[in-house]
Image (cartoon, rainbow, N blue to C red; front, side, top):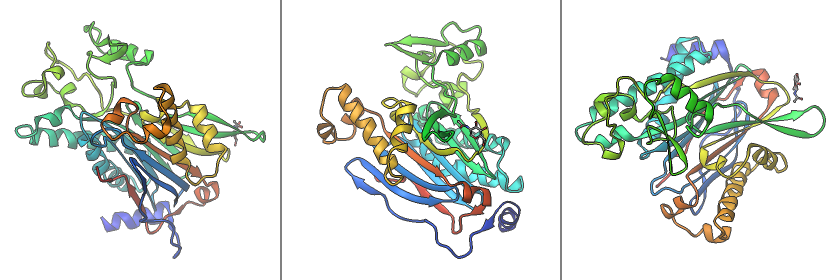
Length: 369
Ligand SMILES: *[C@@H]1O[C@H](CO)[C@@H](O)[C@H](O)[C@H]1NC(C)=O
């Protein structure tokens, strides 16, 4: 293990001499909103914020920065927080172990394998606890990961979180919004098309229910970690809740855990990245979010985005933002979802010099609930 780490250090990155950048640090808290205004990481600066709406926070997230580069993860859980927490505890470790074997270099393949290992681990966890906690079989998580290694950005996504790049256009001072992630929500026509192609003999593979397209009339996302009741017939039976049980036998997995992955060679006009769970994008367009980040100081960017989304959520329901803020968790869920935002400001000087962060930074939204 140590040897593998040393190999990684010497092959991929030079440790930073004696300079203390980042690490530790608490979140500031304001009611149901937690935030870190600004911090430093291997690839530049980051800003982070989370607002809770559910009784138990279902969003989890992390930023890891060290000799390997920078890793950002946003995990939007559903059916309880367990799958998202499991991903937060395991995905990055799998990623590190697998890229160690690959001489410390991240590739689309190392990231894909880290996702599949995490899915395998969670499925094993569910089967171990089936007798005492069968409801784990209906917990799942969307999973958005961004990795910056050797001047390349990798984006891997399962579900409907999103990352948007703010890209400078020439010397105009304009910053354009470019969505980098592919989403897997049945409300998107191509996703319904993909599902129908994969399940040609199932006319009920997507069903419109109360104005929302759902896979088998049950779940909105077509890819996730967990939701094993939609992947393995052995978990689609009593005692899971009847609303999750399929009436016909499942002869192949309905949901998949294979992420969509892209690699993007970073260019000097790539200015910042906004990673966020679906809760943000429900209320803010890509362009609006990029505009807010672009026209304000770096510090507090993530919190500013969350507040803009909450103001929009309040406006839609015709209440004042100041009144929305007084509504406690659980009831809040009627107004908006849990929201997680990371803004990563790219420093191309740091990125091109390939200087790794030492000591590493590891920040997780392991918040009190
Ligand atoms: C960004 O820079 C690259 C070259 O570094 C150039 O090809 C591209 O057109 C630029 N994009 C924009 C939007 O200005």
